Image 1: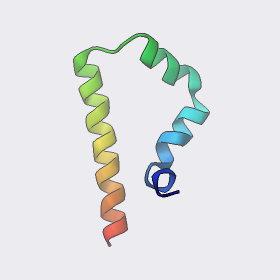
Image 2: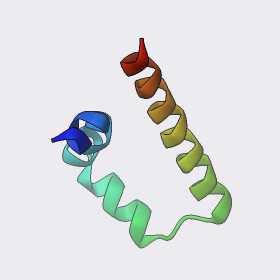
Image 3: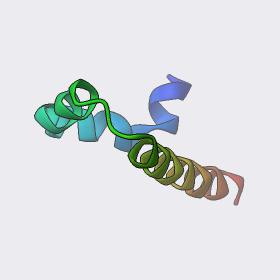
Image 4: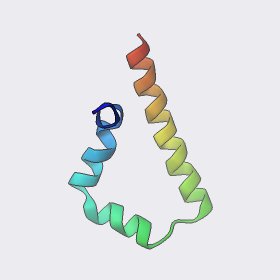
Length: 54
C-alpha cells in the first residue's frame, strides 16, 4: 500500500504509455540517458517526500 502511494506517477505513466516504457528498456538507453531519467525520478521522489513532510 505504502509503495503505490509513494510512487503514483510511475504506475500511471506505465499504464498510460506501455509502448514508451517497453521500448525504453528494450533499446537499453545510454548511461547519460539513464542517469538523466534517474535524476528526474529522484527529483520527483524528493518533491513527494517534501509534500509528505509538510
